Length: 202
Image 1 (cartoon, rainbow, N blue to C red):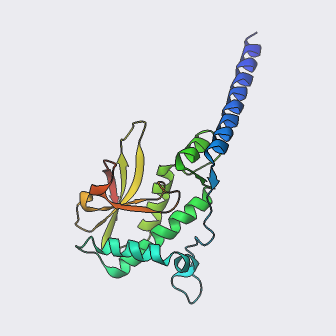
Image 2: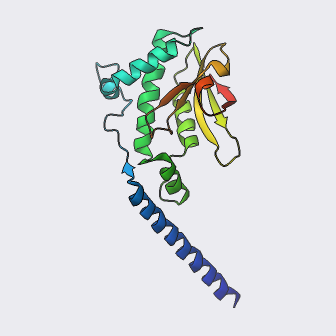
Image 3: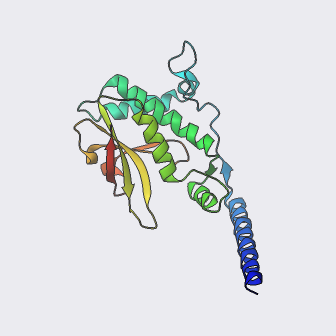
């Protein structure tokens, strides 16, 4: 009798999960969801081209972010700012491709939580991006994992970059989740999220 009840409970959970997936697919269709793909988002450098394929297609975005990083003043270095901008722009798109991202971001979150995608939540973007930035071994900039609304329903994560010796509140948010792989850069003080540092990774 106990085994029969367990089988019934398991089959009920499977049916409930299937209904949830079907409901999510219906919601996706109603919202006009779009599969996100960046065809030139490679950070692999082509021979003879130090900027690679990605930088040629997204040069304007990279140049804009480089200027924003330099405007932070302090120890900001032009060469390092350019490298960080290139990696932030290109690797964020590369991650979106790897995650098989779906727009809008909240819908993709639901797909991850339903088991339809493996990765693509904000903390996935944050962890993968900061590890790539950390591997650059920059001398003039520091990187932080940042969190807003920690352990609350609306918890959000991002990378914050600061100049060495600069304050966290004077840093720049690099949020790869918010615009589905197109890195969103905004001063910490000007963002709508109340960011707090977890710990720095230089």
